[in-house]
Amino acid sequence: MKELIYLDNAATTKTRPEVVEAMLPYFTERYGNPSSIYDFSSAPKEAVANARETIAKSIGAKTNEIYFTAGGSESDNWAIKATADAYKAKGNHIITSKIEHHAVLHTCQYLEDHGYEVTYLDVDEDGVVDLEQLKAAIRPTTILISIMFANNEIGTIEPVREIGVIAKEHGILFHTDAVQAYAHEPINVDECHIDMLSASGHKFNGPKGIGFLYIRTGVKIRSFIHGGAQERKRRAGTENVPGIVGIGKAAELAMETLAERAAKERELRDYLIKRVMAEIPYTRLNGHPTKHLSNNTNFAFRFIEGESMLIMLDGQGICGSSGSACTSGSLDPSHVLLAIGLPHEIAHGSLRLTLSEETTKEQIDFVVDSLKSIVERLRSMSPLYEDFLNKQKQ
Ligand SMILES: *Cc1c(COP(=O)(O)O)cnc(C)c1O
Image (cartoon, rainbow, N blue to C red; front, side):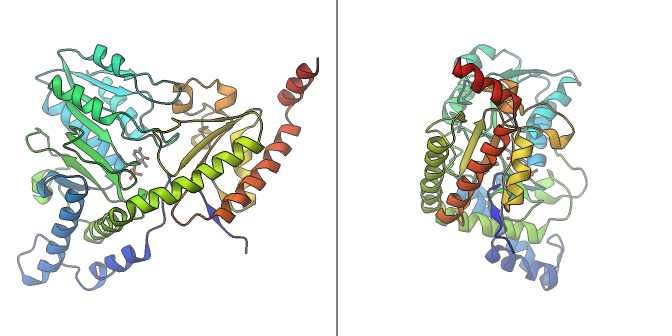
């Protein structure tokens, strides 16, 4: 069988075996409902409390500021919709950026249909939000700034601390979608003046369908799922105990290994970039050169159609991701690549490869070798490329 080379860790990650092992007893032996009174429920109750404590510590928060959710999308929806609701007496204006994940963008668009006003900040060619534009966008009615910690497509890390300072100076709440950054970058909510933070288990070797939202003490926030009294009456529903145990274990392991894992990934990532940029002409490297997630690369190959490239890579056992959204039934290139100023035809030829700690140099060499011949093959079939070569000869 062909070896699988999984370079799509921004889409999801493999659940660590230790995480699965930690979860298993909570399905079969310690399956009690944490809300029950009898002693049989004390083990699951304690497991939930331990996971909450591990996660709180990992971002410098208090345990009662962590709320478990069903993932990053729910955390983003909750933070934004509930703030909009709870603070509507103060104002109806929200500031976000053009490069947010759809969980944030579509939530903001939903609120625009319900009487809220949203400013979508531009980013520069590296994907960094413009802080001057942020300051200028603030109105007396601004209730929330929601800017991601790091971008899921191009890996750019935003100036979160500076944004937090600006938000604090103006008495505006600051939410950050840290789904890509959590467990990959060190985060401290106090240092960065973050009021709300979203994260998701399956992006850092935990299970799918479990995430958390950090909500700073004092933030007025409405309950998101109505029902029972779980999660301090803010998020009803019997706790996903195995999931919570899993995300807690994944967080514990990720925090222990963060520095060495990031260093290892960065070294291989830089090697991948070096080879691609040296060996494949007419290629652009997307994202900020230094303020960048350690495992992310995003290239745009001119004269190439991203989807064809992905299919051919798949034929070699390589999983990557392209910046065009053809899979979702639209031919529009990614909103992120357009926001950094790439013309449509270049944005279409983009490829995101995101590494994990299990990625090896041999895999990277195989990927670059495959990529070289795929790009050559696709270009040789491209009339645009032929035109380009002819013009160069003249
Ligand atoms: C994956 C992702 C999400 C969504 O998280 P889910 O747990 O899949 O709902 C939100 N924001 C960013 C930046 C992401 O990468």
